[in-house]
Length: 312
Ligand code: AMP
Ligand code: MG
Image 1: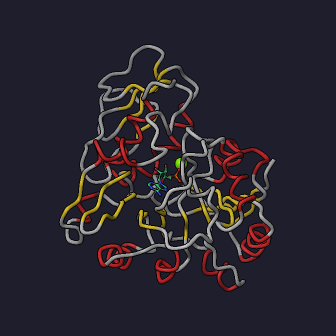
Image 2: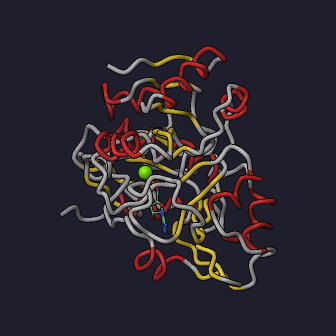
């Protein structure tokens, strides 16, 4: 099995050694645990696709350690620069034109654009001090299509011995993935709802297209079924049927197996979502209470819809 080690200066030094040698390290971020490899090393990047069982047409997000590095890898217009200034380091991914072929072509699925973000975390400063400035590619550290990991043990459960080292930084603060925006001149398209709700972009983007149509047509690899437990998922459930596990939200009269947030706090619900789906995944059907659609609820509902989607 993969080794899980506590987040520490020693574990960061070991992680850098592994990344430099073309290995894979699972790292905690503010969103979920990521599976990292050197973004310039084709062989290392190929190991990520293999370990996850990820289709090669699903491109990886490139992660930088310093917002100022954005221009090295992507063409950033004024809108992109101001978004990076406000939201980085943080859970926002920008899709922009690529400016260099230095990064592994496999990582980008041969697209002319690049998905890039600067995550909030405890390790990149140490990595930089050790002379490793990235960039790294880092999808979520789970089997493709399964539930994203928000604890170190989830990574070990999913990827077994395919990871060289798992850094344990405890529970992820946000618990769901980054918001992805594609920047097209003076407008932005929401490719994936995420931690930062669209409402927060209003002061910075005058023309922001919303998810429904955009997400299905323009984000490669955004599969209908994703984030899925083995159990079937029944949405907007107002009652618990026989044989079901019930996942509640807020105050409820239903006898619940778990509650995403007893106080109906959407940020708490997002933080608990994937761990709850993993731990209830022993029944045939997980029935989930309705989740309000506003704020972070948009991303939670997006993940639940994909968890509930038909699997072909
Ligand atoms: P994840 O599996 O959480 O790392 O998500 C990565 C997602 O980023 C992919 O599923 C794509 O939808 C999106 N993505 C990555 N690169 C691009 C790109 N160049 N253009 C559009 N979407 C991208
Ligand atoms: Mg993922």
